[in-house]
Length: 99
Length: 241
Image 1 (cartoon, each protein chain N blue to C red):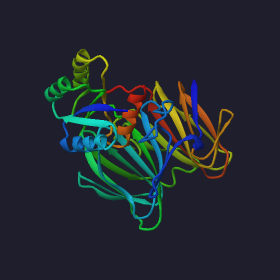
Image 2 (cartoon, rainbow over the protein chains, first blue to last red):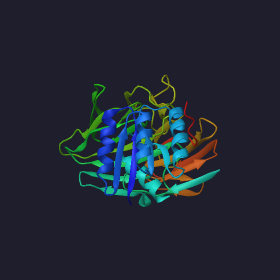
Image 3 (cartoon, each protein chain N blue to C red):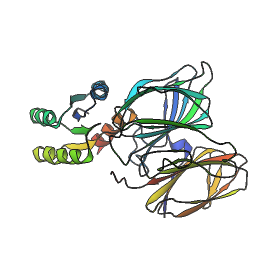
Image 4 (tube, each protein chain N blue to C red):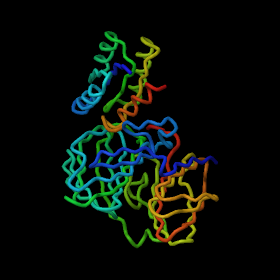
């Protein structure tokens, strides 16, 4: 299944790993950003299935981003990615895409 | 009270040659919507890594990772400067918080290492990462439950950023074990490491898992000599602070 996935996090090294892991999966395409502003800009340029909020963002910032992004696209899933590109990343994506 | 039984032979499985893993909950390419988590307990992997092999440097964040070697030793390194050997009889904890890179290799060139890898969602996000390792007192875990993990830094064993308690014990056949849940709203997940236990008329075999919610007290009985159980008492809802 094709999916564009936007990841926003403040740890550049972790973002690079997440980007590589997502792009390594057939049909999945990652965009990574380090700020909410950059995430909003990217979000307006392309349709995303999933937005992952990663390391460095608080629960309040995550909720604020969810509000803004779902106003722009009610179908997008905005959720926290736990684990930093570990064995949960593929699992979290599979779980969302199978819903 | 509700219960959920995960028989050992129904777990997810991945055999990469150097790594043979059984997954009590969905992990990596194994996705089972009925088995994603038990409260804040998200990962319970039963791993065997061949001699000289291991997990190269990779990141984690915002997860409490507990490793319990059952046989052999792991060689740990991380970007916080830790370089440690973790052996059977010890427990390793990483609060990965805002981000950490680490590697875990089998410390033996030719003997496998077997360990449980357990991930718990934290109740605080983006904390400074920390590493801890404790040696268990072998006199305390025979015919008694020994605390491995709690939320309190001053408690027995080590601690994590979550209202979770882990206990482990090895019991003679016929021994009865009572356990009181430590916090209202928590559920209790039992994992049989060795032997077998009886719970509420059910026989739990080696590597079976049983989750019990809405429970204040539960009773177990060891059904075989040397039966070992890990009891994980975890919040069913995560209240992130």
